[in-house]
Structure formats: C-alpha cells, structure tokens
Length: 496
Image 1 (cartoon, one colour):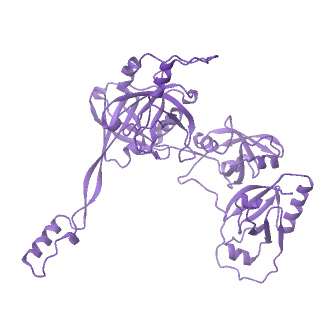
Image 2 (cartoon, helix red, strand yellow; image 1 turned 45 degrees about the vertical axis):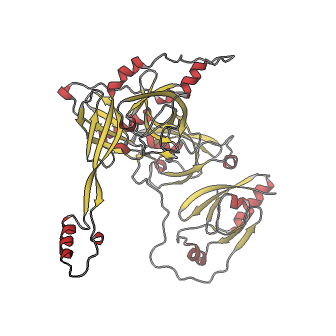
Image 3 (cartoon, rainbow, N blue to C red; image 1 turned 120 degrees about the horizontal axis):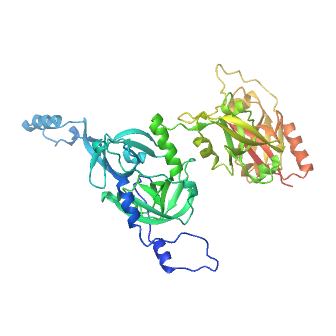
C-alpha cells in the first residue's frame, strides 16, 4: 500500500550484494565504479540536512455529562458530580499538543529550507534541528499539497550563512545510478542509507506525479529529506513509500529535483505555485483514433474542446487538433501532457505543434494560469422556464455494425436525459451489450455531435457516413460525443 504519511521509504541492501558479486558481462556497459565508502561525501552533506519537529493543537473531547455515574434522584452526590463534570469541560472540546517528525534540507545559506508539505501541514510551531543539535524556530514561507513541497525560513545564528545543498539535474539521472538518502527515520536523528534509482516516471495518484523510485532504505521520518546522487547533488525529495507493513520494503518514491527547484522558487517568490493552463479538454490518441486522423502511430493528445477566449483559442487551436509537440518537447501520450502544461511558466510563450488535416502545423501559445480548483469548460446548461413537452414524431435508426440505436433530439429526450436546450446532435437511445459502442463505454443519453469529423443532426446522416466508411474498407469510425456537458472522442471498430 502507498504510504504518503509518508515519512517513509524503503530498502537498500540489494545493491551492495550485487556489487559484491562482481558480475561480469560479455560486453560491459560504461558505468561508474561503486565507491568503497560514502563517508567523505556524507561528512560534507550531513550539515545541510535537518530534522523537523512540529506541534499542533489536536481537538480532544473532555468528560461528558452522559459519563457521570447514575445516581438516585435527589442524592446529595448528584449536584457534586454535576459540578465536577461541568468544571472539567462537559461537552466543550479541550486541546492537547500533537507532535510530528520529518526531515528537510537547506537550499540557501540565508536560511531557506525545503521539506514535504505533509510534514508541516497544520503545524502551529515548527522547529528545525541541525546536525550539531542547534534548534531554530522556522517560519512557513509557502507550501503546495499537490506537489507536496513546503519552504521554511530560519534565521542563521550570528548571521553566518548556513551550509546549503546544490541541486542536480534529475532529468539526467538514470536507472541504476547510486543514490544516498539522509533523514530522520522514526525520530532517531540524522541517518544515512544508500541504494540505486530503481525506476523513473512513477505515478501514484496524481496526473502531475513523476516520481523517482529508489531502493535506498527510507522509513517514517524520512519524508522531506534529500536524495543525493554520487556527486552530492540533490536529485529528489523523499516523499512516499510502498509497503504492506508501513516500513521499509524496498519501494520508495522521491519528487524529482527539477520539479522541486521550480516549486521552491515559486513558493519563495509568490508564496504559492503558479501552474500553467491553456484552456482545452483532451484525451488519449488510440490506434483507432490515430488511423482516423491519418497519423502514422498513436501519440500526442486529441483536443476535444477549446475554452472560449482561453490561451489555446487565442493561439488558434481547434477541436480535432492533435497536439504532438509542446514547449520544445514531444508529447508521447496523455500521461505526460498535463505535467508539460502545468510546469510551463505562466505568461511565457511556447511553441506548440498540432496535427491538423493530415499535416503538422506550428502555433505560438501564451501560457495562462490555472485556477484552483482547475478551470474547466462547462457546457451551457438549460435555464429558466422549461419548454412544454410537445408531441414529436421520433426519427430513429439502428446501426447494427456499431450496436447503436439513434434518435433525433426532441423535447422528450431532453426531458428524459437532462439535455440542455443548446445541445444539437443525435441522441443514443440504446447500446447493444458487447458491441463496438459498448466497448467504448457509450451509453443511452450520450449525444453524437460529429461522425468522421463531420457535424450530424439526424440519425440518417450518421448511417450514411458509416456506410461510406465501410465501403472504403475503413476499420473504425470516429465519433465526437457529449455526456452531460463533457465532450470526448470515441473510435469504434467497424464490424463486417
């Protein structure tokens, strides 16, 4: 189970065992030799790492009147006990002090320190403890729960600059590279473990996740501590463990330093993180969708809708565009795209490459700022007085190849499926189980707006386009559908 309480991380002995074996390969790859000892490096790094303790008021319910002993009515002890329980707080909440432990590291000699947000969240007092047992009160500069980073500030004793870490380039870190973790496991104080990077690009729960995975032993109390490379540069912040028992099991996750540095800079400058926003809704490009749009392979993200007057609309992006390049980087899939957008600097102008009408087209886009919660493009909902339901002759078609029964939009269908007055298209009224439509999770009440990138308003139009595609021996048909204001594309296979 993933533990983000997180003060924890895992494992670390396997690497040493492998190194001891001295396994020989017939064609060995070029690699750094394992050091005989990390001692010299640790001596240099240890003063930059701090232990963090926090205290907060935790609600606690005092004794309740219902807990008072049951005494006979009129007993002389009845008033005595009632007075005692009232004086002790009765139903009023009392408070006690709660304490949590974590780790952090100095990023600036002026006293700026990075840790995890969850280490200090809700804290009223934060104390930073250095290697020489110096204790300093810390002030929270800013924090972000989504990235799970916080920046603290202490006043260096005697105005003398504090020893600070140097950030490394986490993008250059490779699976198999040596790493060192320093932190405060179980509140024991400064401790060191070593291991390797086990994997990159791990996602645990959020679309912005991009963790480094390591087998360096990390446990409760290590959260917020640094993960160093063999050159002594910080390449990650230890954040979560994967463990059935809650202790080291060999799977630990660190936020990459490139993301940490960017987040820390913004927290210091603005007290919060400004995330990029471009104003589109999008979805994955499957093999079927790629074929429908004439792409040689499935990559990029398909634009399903564009927010009016948003950054994308102003840049000229349109529905049906496939974004294949963003800010100088390829867009391989849906998983990477949200991070590229969110990490783009607000107000900057980036190059965007879209696939449109069978060829690539370059655009310039100015990055907007994402609201919290994230901006969404909500379709207009019908308002005001409802129209009276009038009798209407339904226009219905069944497309057996897709497993769909379709009907023209009518007042009855608007009423039945809660469709807004502005919706135009063809309503799905039945989906055959195990059909191509069912495979793509289409359901009754969905509205088909386009077929093969052509607007449709009647079931007959859908039937004609599908028949034409079958005559051309196409393997799939691309539908653009809307469900309760949420638009998306669906590529349905064409059965013979």
